[in-house]
Image (tube, rainbow, N blue to C red; front, side):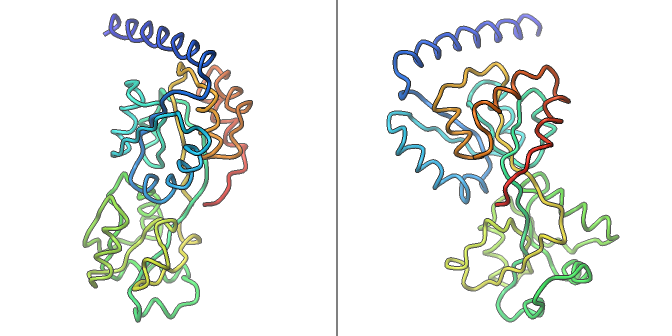
Length: 264
């Protein structure tokens, strides 16, 4: 195992030198690969990657989708440049994870549902939510752990009738009347989801943070720094370099915890 680890380090160093040569010769030409979950790929990344390709038309993009564990593995193995995920941060111990934005959830119900009459869901309403058949994310996806924390702290056991890794599936079964849903607010589109009403639940659950991560030994080309900042405007190249220069994960987390993050 030690021999394989050292061999991989040498190969990564050689690849870094190749990237450096390409950066000098062709700064706007190259590849950018990322691994992410469905929610990010479906609801967040499309307009950002569109802007990126307009700016760098000669950079080839590759996107992989998977579970948070799979996303972590792809980056750790060097298969992709960046990981973008919310859940399962414990899988990313060997990566530098940069916080991008905070987000929260909405309860979605069919038109005419009793909860629709409440102008604002109260803490008392959490009990009502738990009493209805509930459809939400599979554990380990899209901030699901925050939901469990909220219900557990209130001493409630929701009636889970269906779980899915994709918000579109959750919305489909809510429309069919199988239950009410809890999804990331970003996944609700009033134009496409006209059969549903979204009720703000951000005060019922702690916010989640989406992060973008990479291996510390990754050679970041200029367009890669810009792709990070496109996804998280506050993560400037200087700030990314400050984070990379810190020796320990604890130091990095302390610096990053002091940042003001935007709300998505």
